[in-house]
Structure formats: structure tokens, C-alpha cells
Amino acid sequence: MADKPKKRVLVIEDDEHIAEGIKLNLNLNGHEVSLALDGISGLRAWEELRPDLIVLDIMLPGMDGISILRTIRLEDDAIPILILSAKGDSQDVIKGFTHGVDDYLAKPFNLDEFLLRVDRLMVRASRQAAVTGHSPEKLYRFGSNWVDFIDLTAEGPRGRIELTGQEVRLLRLLIAHKGKPVTRGMMLEIALGYPRDTQTRTIDNFMVRFRKYFETDPSKPVHFKSLRSVGYMFQDKAK
Image (cartoon, rainbow, N blue to C red; front, side, top):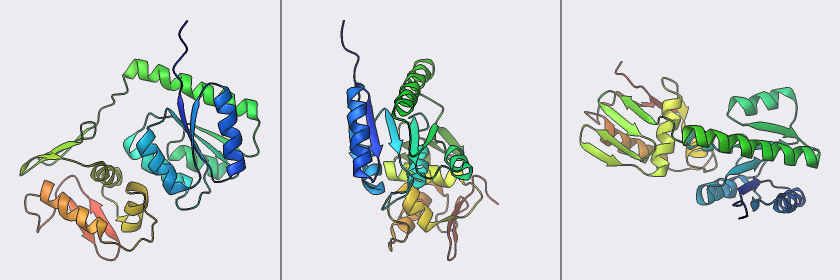
């Protein structure tokens, strides 16, 4: 009988002792494990490896676990994510589930329980993939424009557009907060994976591009509006 293909697990945990212990036990259970010891490298590892499951700490250097969770959910709402954190009171757990975590386990934890939860999440994800084909509807229309979040394409007043991964994540973040202000710091951290206090004109440059892509008159935007000293706001209809 052929061996089952190994599932790829990404562990984002800054305590190296805990991370190595998790890796050892997941390896013994037949999984292929990669480690990231801070938030920024964890997000980069997710982008490069596209694992089958993520084990995520909340308190991380560089970028906290909730921001990582929110960033991943902008692009992938199917990958199972298990938070493993010392922050285990009810408000922390509620915050995790609000932002799309699949399971939450407080430290210190029982190893057998942890391994069972990982297996359960893997099985559930496999069943959902078999039923849905991992192809939820990702087409979003606003005005005369549309964005295809699967094929990374779009169409605006000047024709077809090939989008980058960063552009897609920024669009998803703005659309998810439709009609509400989104700060530059939030866009930098959640959509682009930069520290929130990074001093850069990157976000403004992206907005110039979006206006060129999607606004009939880029000098008078109706969808991508500037908010002085705050950031930007997306509206799907002209107001």
C-alpha cells in the first residue's frame, strides 16, 4: 500500500524550544514541518510554502499573530489555522475566532490533545476540499469594474488588468472594510506584511495605480478616496 502524502505544517512560534518540540511530534505523526520564529518570516513562509495547516502563536516579534491571521484570510479562507497561545482568556479566544481562526488552544497544552486537534483540522479541510473543490466565488464587481481574486485579473475603464498578489490583498482589505476608513498602518501590516510604523509612500503609490485601473477619472475618484491624515476608504458605488 502506498504511503499517504505528507501534510505540510507551518509553525509560527517565537519560543524556539516549544517550536522544536511541536516540530518533532508532528514529524513523528507523519507531517512535514517548517518553522518560523517571528511574524514577518512566518508570513513570508506562508506565501512561499502554501502549507496545509498553520500553527500560530499570537505574541510574536515583528508582526503579531492576529495580524498574520487577518492577512492570510484576505487571500485564503480555507487553510486550517490553529492558534496556540499563552493568551487564553475568553476575549482573546473570541478575537481569534472573529478573525477566522479554526481552533484555539491555550498554553500550557496537552500534547495528545494538540495532535488530535491538528488531525481533526486536517480531516475537516480534506473533506471540505473534496466537496467544494476549494473554489469559492471570488469575483467582485463594483461600478463597471470587476476583480477576479482567483485568477488575479481585473477589468476597468481602460481594459484588462493583471494584478499582483500585493494588489489583490490590498483590494480585499479595502473591500472588506467598504465604507470605512482604513489606515495606512493597517494596510502596510495586514495586506503587505510590513511593520505598522514603516515610513513609506508605498500605500499612496498603490492607490495611484488603483485609481488608474478602476476610476473613470483618476483625478476625481469615486471608489478609492483619500482621508486626510488617516488613510483611504473604498466605496463600491459613487456617492
